[in-house]
Amino acid sequence: MKKVIYIALFICTFASKAQELKLSPYTQYLTENPFTISPTFAGMDEEYNRLRISGVMQWIGIKNAPSTQNLSYDVRFDEKSAGGIILYNDKNGNTKQIGGQLSYAHHLVLDDASEQYLTLGLSYKFNHLKISTENFTNGNDDPVNDPAVGAARTTTNHNFEFGALYRYEKFFFSLNASNIIGKKEKDFNSIEPLRLRNYYVYTGYTFVSNSQEYEYEPSIYLKYFEADKRSVTDLNFKARKYTEDGYIWAGINSRFINDQSFEPLSIAPLLGIKKKDYYFGYAFQWNINEASDLNSSGTHMITLGFDIEKNRGGTSW
Image (cartoon, rainbow, N blue to C red; front, side, top):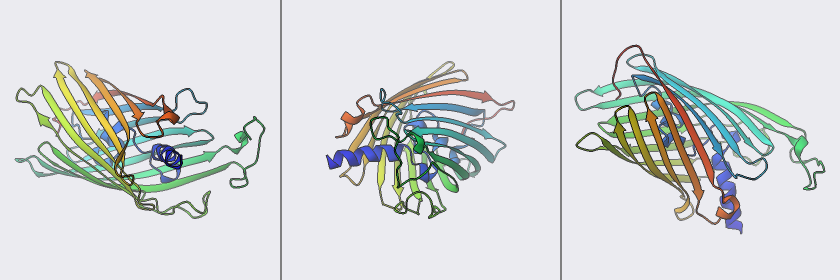
């Protein structure tokens, strides 16, 4: 039972870490939106500005279940410069947070002939957290005061994130450091870690068929938390089929808790379609560990997108 509780808490904290100023991704980055995990992916498409809206719903059927809404927009300014913005709203019971980030990416061509590129990215992030103590009850709808929290609490935090992305032909490797600044000691609970830094790697390779009609992309996402040395790994695979006016794709994601003998935490089938300038993606994250009975309905995520074509020409790299 202790292990089940640990896994359940890990799911909640990984899904929504209010004090870490960065909503951890479910599978948004796999639904054609890697900008959600790294500023280096801003403006990767020279032909389009990308708008994406995602909604995540957990614990379906349970009152005050966690839910998250995320909006992102990234744009290429010129040959080397790009930027983007992310806004989010997250609610988990009596805890609510809103926030976002402003990002800048600088794209450099190392060698055009061999298709080598380097991108450096920087994000400023802000987060406003509120705990609504007026809704605390004893289980019988009778209001109670929690001495550990006191009255309704709010806090606003600011932080930064830095990333680097290397691309060689169809290979990519992204390394990022998030929440570079430590947390203020006065916030909420003295046992909370003051070091919020976490590091993550996203890497993969895209195989292209001889006909150029199909693409196959295995990838790995690894995240490490400095304060308590937790880490998780995503193993991913996607396949695309290009059509006359877009493409369709399908994929699979499996998430592992590295400090629990690399046991699988969840599995998520994904699918999506892009038709002209419109995009739709869906993912269902299903827990397959001992905590699966606590969230038998799984986690659903829907992503809607619109690609705004630029007036000038260009090619993606």
